Length: 534
Image 1 (cartoon, rainbow, N blue to C red):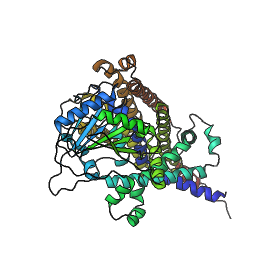
Image 2: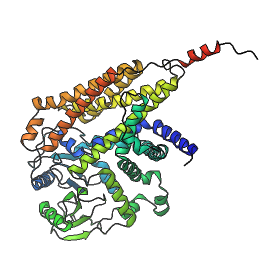
Image 3: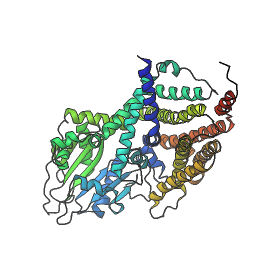
Image 4: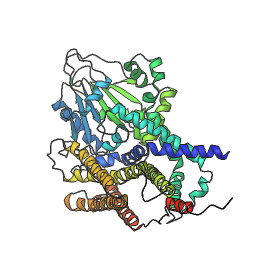
């Protein structure tokens, strides 16, 4: 392979990684945390007990909806598991005359607080603090925040394409990449940063390629809509092809009791050979009621899970979803591989650790850009505007985002439970803290801001599990005592990350860069040397 081609790939690797590197860092951080979204949904509601009898929660959900929304158009009931904080049930009111009611309309109503409730482990409505929990990080890593979703997904999609370009060009550019993986030189400046960047990149290289490519697949209809536009006239036809459903039965107006959903769920799990995930009841309390049960995505690789539809009065099976086509099955497998829902605890830890490696890879690459170019500056003590901008953006994003996330967790614990819009204020606190860190990064010298941000983040993270021990019934020791390893694991992970940030702050504060000789001075000295006579 020619040297010129490898150099061109090195140039492509550098700039494709830098231009959207800060967005990629955000995506990696939020996506990595989202692998434990169910656990965080529980951890951020410490009032909620662990679910030990899912069918009790299901019975409580049906009883609550029968009282609260007996004439609704549909009910949506997630089947509770030990990972979940209970069942966040939704209902869709009967559409008004002339109002269109379709699949997208049902989904669009799910965010309304007046049409949802949380059913706890005891089958009763849970009195818990309002929070987005781990679901915030899941949405944040591809929908961002404070901006239209369509813009955010285009931005994240373009950043993901640049990530794929950076990975492939990095493999080509580093001819000794696997040899360098086993080399780690400490306190060597640029060489140390490059060794760390190579190690985190190669350590989880298959994961980086997989997560980047499958991330693009999840956005394929947005980034490459031509096949859909050429073959489907409207979205309803597309949804019917991708998500087939039983024929719609018109509401009769004859009140008829709904069958016990536990019987249908048990039968569906027997037929599917796997746990159920969602139960949707159309026209509950009517003679035309139908109950559709989806198989849990945790039980298979593909996200396109089978579904069964039952008569809501007799419990008779009336429809089974057909096997998906090759294209739909492939897309479902790619999306399932990206989300990692099929993985057990061991698999999720593997995803999580590889996500941390990806985060460190992006962060070290951004820092390496400044380390390499500072040594090439004519006067390293007086860099140009572009260099200062990149350097301070690195501090604002790499140092500020972890601090913002830490404040998000603290806001969950400290904001008044009865605060109006509490879930929104948790998210606002993340961005307020992040904005304060960014302002500090642009006002104070980076050498002072780096250790300060890391130290504050570390102290707050270490203090969080201690606060839980004192102020809640779900502290580390209490969770271990009842065998609730998921909540105990989250507290332990927060403690470990806090210690890591404190050690990092100490390391950065003690770092003393080797003074570089100013090139302009050397050039000026050389110009004073008289030229030899001709």
